[in-house]
Length: 172
Image (cartoon, rainbow, N blue to C red; front, side):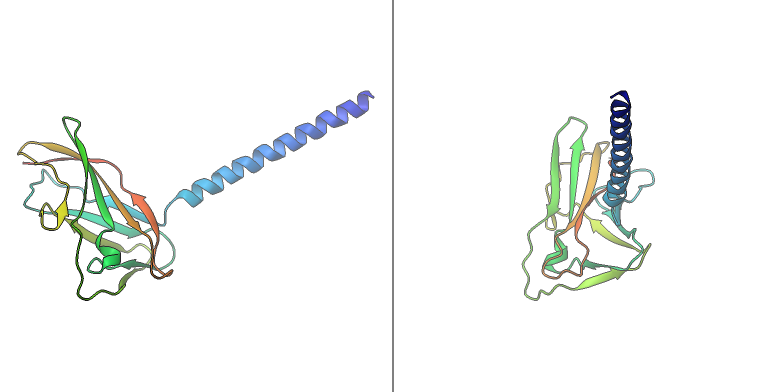
């Protein structure tokens, strides 16, 4: 009876350890899968910014394969960037493209090879972008850019949502 109890306890221990290592492997696989094949960043600004010049957003193909991204001129790529902002007083909001109208519209793309980057501009022009606060001289804004694409109407384009790290920008 003792031998049977010892074998059962050993078997339970082996099953537990196997499940634990399988769980660690699946957690590691999930972490690798969670790593995006696209990186997005707000370009680092030397010195300070003014609202007279745009922000530059860098979209990089971090995969080992070519990727197609919708061009910004068409409705599929037009609204793919948003900027979350927070000011020093704790006020916050979202900046997005002003809704567009198209007389010509088709889902054209640009192909990024592995390691290639695409640069898009986010301006303070209220005719193009809505949601910016008043930015007086000397103000700081904490900004976080998100790039997203549903991939529709075709399945060949990159799909997903990637958020850049938070960055604080001083405006003069």
